[in-house]
Length: 149
Image (tube, rainbow, N blue to C red; front, side, top):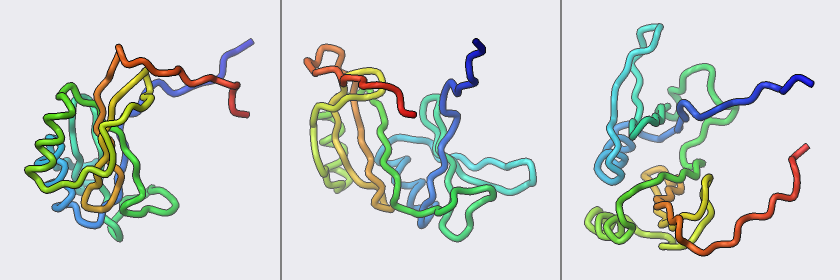
């Protein structure tokens, strides 16, 4: 029996934002990402946020690039970023930048196992989760009840 094709990883995400400049400032100054302009094949200049081997392309509301999502909306994302920096350092850092912590630190289950997370919002009110892997965290493993059909 032939196996169906499947994806291996995420190359990039697109985040629709109200203001690219405000978004770049926040993600650079608060989360330590690098804002980078790049030129696409048709000569248009676009912006992305880079961190590690990941990239988030930015679309500004009303100036999205085609093809795009059916309903591009600023403030509709819920993103989790991994860090190796202790969460207590992030809490101090957010305080310096006058960023309110919505919740945490709190134990969660990440894609590869237990994490501890804190939650904040970006300028568009997207929910941002900053998490650190906790391999020694005692946590019930989620019970897999079957494949979605």
